[in-house]
Length: 360
Image 1 (cartoon, rainbow, N blue to C red):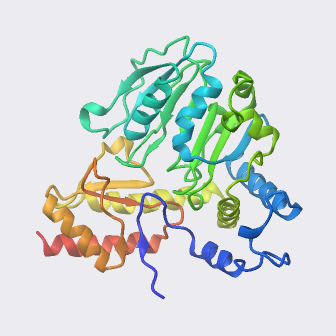
Image 2: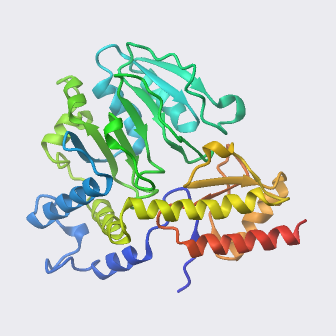
Image 3: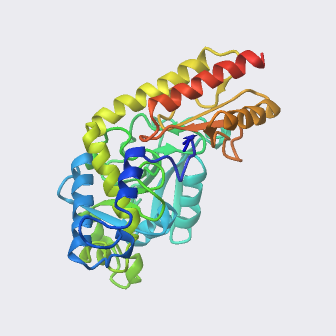
């Protein structure tokens, strides 16, 4: 069997050792006589899986004790509604820095429940940078400030955080969680869909400061109330059991790798290899201002739609898949999440060099 190097933005590559372990345990998990997929989520054995998964994440991210970890469903997209429902309760307004498609969705969905105050936007240059914080006029009545820390589509990332005073920061980290070290205490909420840097699609992780959970109206529908999920240890309804189990295996893999500190070194190295080639190329052009380049989603183009199409087609013939840029951005996008090995990036570099030589 020949595996390709999968540069998909999500669902994305998983560590091969994790897939092999899951395959070994597919028919029978430990001595249970059944697969995790067949296991009752109320069973003691599955509760162990849930507890181990949470404990691993807490240690990997150094999550303080005054934060609650939740394993939910509905993708990160549901959080564009669920978060304002739960914490936009005092003044019915939130601040947001608009940096692309995901903040656009947050503005639209949050705006249905209150007022979205757009502090700044990078739409003027197709979201190729993060707006300056210098002249931001934070709303003193804002219930929270929403940011998308890493933009999967356009390939930008924050290199620092704005300072909204006592207003909690809500960060969408779907495509960058666990890729570098973050100080969780600087955020009110961190949320992430698992299908980019953690595990398979189906589970969404929410890390929320417990104090914020007191804001929720008791009359919220149970499935949309953070408190209900917290009180039931993310087991109010049947959770995505297998996706959580797979997340546990990925957390174990990352722990054995040396944790987030060590994977960050590798991620910076992988990204530097690609950006260095792009910067020194006469054919390829990076799509993003250098200061705000993502470590996870490297976007670039040749300047020719026909050449971009040929690049993607030829890359697939060389076992390099899912390199086409998002339809709104065009060009190419190499998503190099934690599980993408250095060898995969090197294989892409070799192809890029040959493609440039053949098409210059």
